Image 1 (cartoon, rainbow, N blue to C red):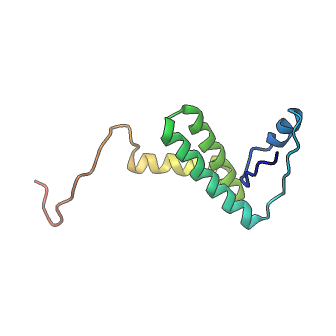
Image 2 (cartoon, rainbow, N blue to C red):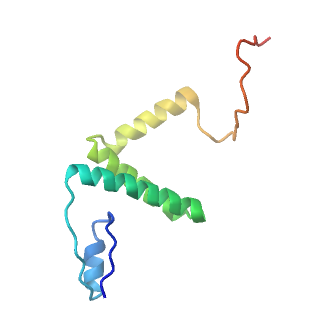
Image 3 (cartoon, helix red, strand yellow):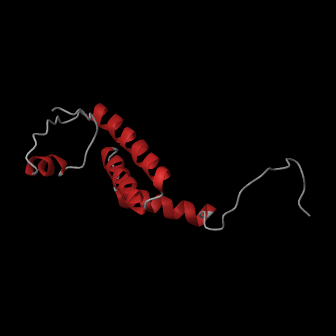
Length: 109
């Protein structure tokens, strides 16, 4: 019985499938299709995280982010450097702040 997936999978998945006695059919994506597949995989992994809040899904999200950075010719370390700089300038999310509104033109005294 054939089951279609048509989605990006981790590099070792075809070998794992073959070791189980099944026959995976794979293609190597061109740059454009690979970028589209990475974006779809990111959406898939974020959705899976939001459905169960499983910490393993966060690891999957990071793996996809690493692949997206590499596809764009940027190292993960460069992405992390940007994250650290933004954190230093604007902070993180640990204080749980929710901006409700801003009164424009109001002076703070």
